[in-house]
Length: 101
Image 1: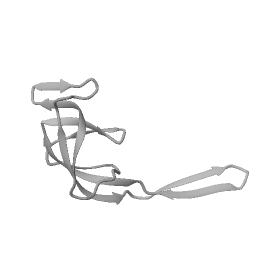
Image 2: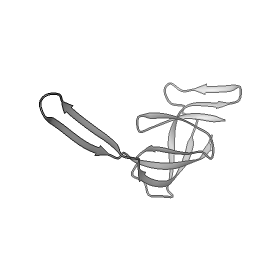
Image 3: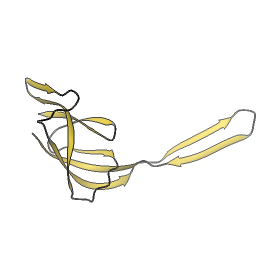
Image 4: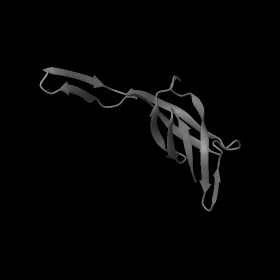
């Protein structure tokens, strides 16, 4: 059984017990959250929402918060001696999918 969930403007394919990193949400570690389910599949039976399934629920638990690896943003203009270097680390929330109903 798997489901397609939506959070933070992105969609994820998840199964029970899976741990994923999503866009940061302001919830304490150990908190239970409910996520929007777009599609749910149980073998041969597939249910799709328009856009969200009303009777399906995906529950998850917040495991940790963190920052992703650093990326370097480097901009320059040729022949003008203009150079800009900037680093960025995207914050994330790690969640564990506890149940899909």
